[in-house]
Every structure is written in structure tokens, then in C-alpha cells.
Amino acid sequence: MGPDGVSGWTLRECREQLVDPICDVINSSLMEGKVPKEWKRPNIRPIYKGGK
Image 1 (cartoon, rainbow, N blue to C red):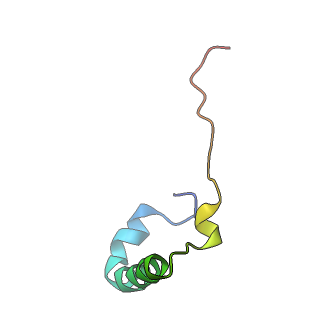
Image 2 (image 1 turned 45 degrees about the vertical axis):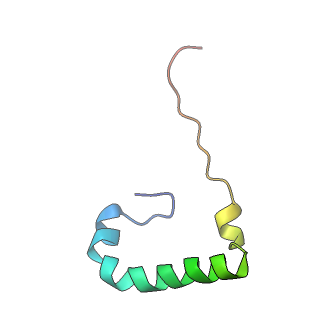
């Protein structure tokens, strides 16, 4: 599961249906010079490596 709650398996199975809409969003973002505010939200999680 990714941070969005969608499994990698689901994305692989639906890739043909998802590629055009995702391409459209990215291309329009590049042409307008803007990114959706959801893309700016950090998704940072600390990784415990042991020790103190």
C-alpha cells in the first residue's frame, strides 16, 4: 500500500486506463506553471533505525 491507500497491484492492473488522465494532469500542470496543492503537502515519515 502506498500513502494514498492504493496498492501497487491495483495500479499495475489499471495502468492502461490511468495513463491518459495522469498524463493530462501533468501536462496541464507544466503548461500552466502550477502544481496541485495536494502535491505540495509533505509525506514524511521517520524511519526508526534502532539505538537511542
